Structure formats: structure tokens, C-alpha cells
Image 1 (tube, rainbow, N blue to C red):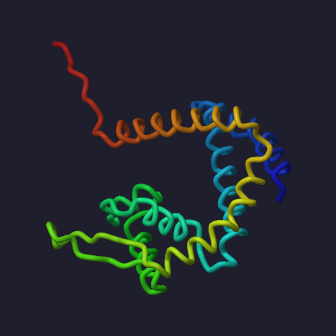
Image 2: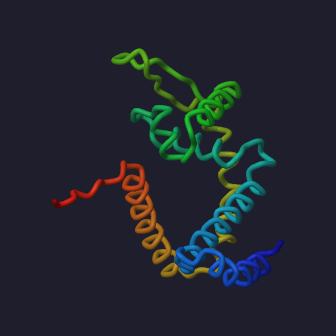
Length: 182
């Protein structure tokens, strides 16, 4: 389905959703749906550029972060946060990158339970081969936005992430019981 028909489908179904879920803000529902379509579009765009090179987006993202964070303390838990992957997926990603010889894992000298990760020369070489193939895809993907619009979008996305993270923390807290006066 093309981008335009996906947007048309969202617009066409919004009144039905609004009728069906009256307590939910139509604007916020629309934002959720648009963000999900945006995520799907970005995933597809990047996959088309990197899958032919044997990478998935989370795997390439992980290798890029390991490369750029060196010589800092790069741990699996930090990567989980930065790549937005659960620990099970990150374990699989790191195992795959290690099996391919793209990264090495060392036991932390201060805490034997922790591991530290580093990109290997083979991993750096492969990263330098693959990254240039993503540049045209990313440039094309954002070509419909001016630099100022990209900066505005960045600002709004940052603000939305903080708001959503705060809401997630608030929603995970137990409900507050009201004090009854006698």
C-alpha cells in the first residue's frame, strides 16, 4: 500500500474510531496511528538498503553504536536502551554479531558479571562498507522536509518521547487511594 493510500485509509477510518471509542481523544489516536505508519515506513526504507548486506536495522544500529561509543563502557544493557530492544533480542543480536566476527566481548575487570563490547577490525570494515548504502535511502526518505521542518520534527519528537516516558512511569505506579474524610 502506498504512503498516500495509507494516509487516506487512516483519515477514512478516524470517524469510525471516534464513534467507537468516545472517551479517547481523536487527535491522540490519530497521532498514534501516524507514528506507527511512520515507524513502518522508516523500517521498510532502511530494510531495503541494509538487508541485501546481511543486516537487520537493529543489528546494524547496534554495531554502529558499539563503534561510536568506543572506548566508553559499552554494555548489553546500555544497548538495549539505545536500540529499544528487549534483553532477549539484544542477546540474539550480540550473539549474531559475535559469530560473524564483528564484535568481541570482554568480562568487566571490576565486575565479572558484566561484559564490555568492542567492535573488531572486521566489524569496522564491514560497517564502513554498509553505511554508505544507507545514506541515499535516508536522504531520499527525508527529502520532503526542509531542514527547518526536520529540526521542528526533531524538537516535537523529543518532547513527545519525554511526555510518553513520563506517562509510562506514571501509569506503572500503583493507583493513589484518596483519603476519605469522616
